[in-house]
Image: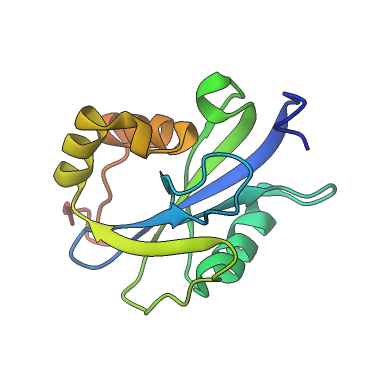
Amino acid sequence: MVHAQGLLHRAVHVFVFNSRGQLLVQRRSASKDEFPLTYTSSASGHVGAGETYDDCAPRELKEEIGLDSPLEFLVKLPASPGTANEHTVLFRAVTDAAPTPDEHEVASLTYFGLEELKALLQVDPAAFSPPFATLLTWYFAHGRPTSQTGESCV
């Protein structure tokens, strides 16, 4: 409803990486009202009334792909056409736990290397939801993950 009316609202996205530095990418369900069957973040969703970004992110991670993992705040982006009018906070998780997707939310889950995603985004941007494309572009420029020791794990 908020998307159909073009209303500004809040959302979270979570990028889940495995220990090899691959990003878990969700293909949205065909029943989604916006951007069905496009690639999107590992998990994402709208922040509820009275809910914080920090409360919403682990809830969405659990509801959509069945994972519990510590989350790291990466960035908050203002609402814009590129974020589907969502004030968006991006979090990162690193886990090798097996996801269990909600079949009503998720058509499929696939791990991609970042260079592979960058190439696919350049060749077929329509395959990505606009918010995911915006977040990936930010991530390629600013958000490379680091290990506990400060060494790159990508």
